[in-house]
Length: 90
Image 1: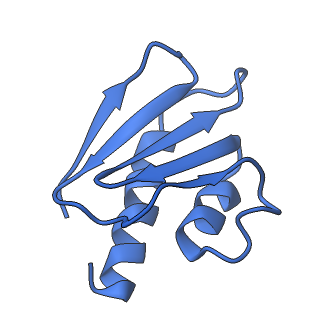
Image 2: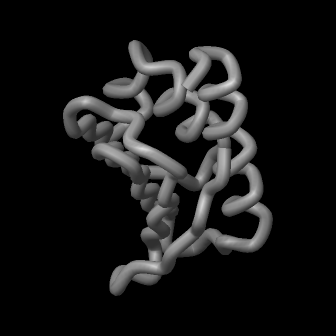
C-alpha cells in the first residue's frame, strides 16, 4: 500500500494518507488501553512515544510525545500500517 506522510500544523502529529478508502467510520484512540481491541491502533501504541491515534476514511493521524523525534518513528508507523493491511487484505 502506498502511504504518504504529511506534517500537520501540530508538530507532534503526522497524517499518513493511504491509497484508497479503508475505514468505514472514524476511530479514535486516546490511549494504549483504549486501543487494545484494534490490532492496528494497538501496534502503533506499542511503538512507544505515541499518545493518540485517529483513523478516518483514507488516513491515520498519529500524535507522538513532544520529547520524541519523528526520525525512525515515521518508518516504524508505515511498517505497522502495511503489516496490518497485509494481514486483513486491505
